[in-house]
Structure formats: structure tokens, C-alpha cells
Image 1 (cartoon, rainbow, N blue to C red):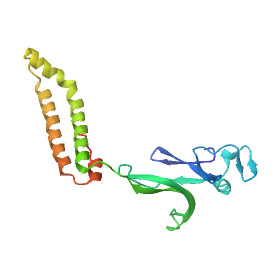
Image 2 (cartoon, rainbow, N blue to C red):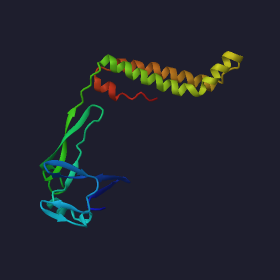
Image 3 (cartoon, one colour):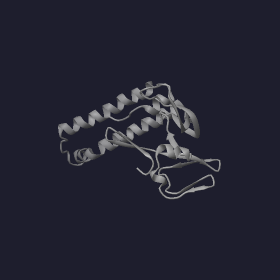
Length: 186
């Protein structure tokens, strides 16, 4: 739509952004402008309806975001790549011109011990949130000696047991990445 591409994968729409170099800087476009300059020439009206080939003649190329792990990596340095490997059914080594990013490891300033402590705090907050809806049974038991239903007792015991298990699993982790990626949910 409007001079840019859309891909439909499993009912998910992925929008492909375009970029071009203007005055020595890379400018990204989520929508191609209807009118724009190309050198000293003004392209007035209809810019959004141009074919991919025509857009590339005017310097608009796809922005390709490489696969990366946002927990442990960052993308940076958007740049033009005139030989980006983009396999086709007919040519596994086909290349095309795109803008793409470099990927590098995140700098994680916390120590392994600090990250473990942080994850355990998140785990305890999760357990608190799961216990909180049934806390009134415990208060009622303390104030009025009214029995807590057995299913509630079991549910609360399971929550506490899960916390103990998960804390042990967190303690067994040895790398920053494994701690950051550890799923505390239960």
C-alpha cells in the first residue's frame, strides 16, 4: 500500500520500512512521501504509488532488521548494503541492495549474583501477586478461626513450592544470558 510492501504471514502483517540517503544521512520512512526531491528533480504527487523498481531508482530501499536476541543483543549502525544476501527459490546466493543494521552483544553491567537477586525478586513479586487474591482467607482464619478451603490451601502451597523450585533453578544458572532469559512464570 502506498509504495511500500506488506507481507502476510500466518495472518500477521509485517510492514517493510524504506530508507534512503538524503544530504549524507539515512532517513527512514514508514510511508513513502507522496512528493519528494531526487537530486534537483521534484517528484510531485504519486510517490506512494511507485513500483519497487522506480522507488529504488530514487534511492528508496527496504530496511532489513537482522535476526537478533533482544535480551542479549542490540541492533545499531543502520547502513546501506549493496550486496545483502537474499536467497530466492532460483538462487540461494542472490543479493540485493538494502539498508540493514549491525548486531552486537549488550553490555550487561550487573554481576551474575546481582542478576540472580533481581530475578528472584521478580519471582517473589509474581508469587505475591498470585497469593494476594486469597490472602483474605488467611486473615479471616487469623481473626475468626474460620477454616481455609482445602483447594485454597493447596493452591497457596503450590505457589510457594513453585517459588522454591524456581529459586533453585535460578541459583543453578551460571551465565548472565541464561539468567536474563530464564522464565519465572509458573
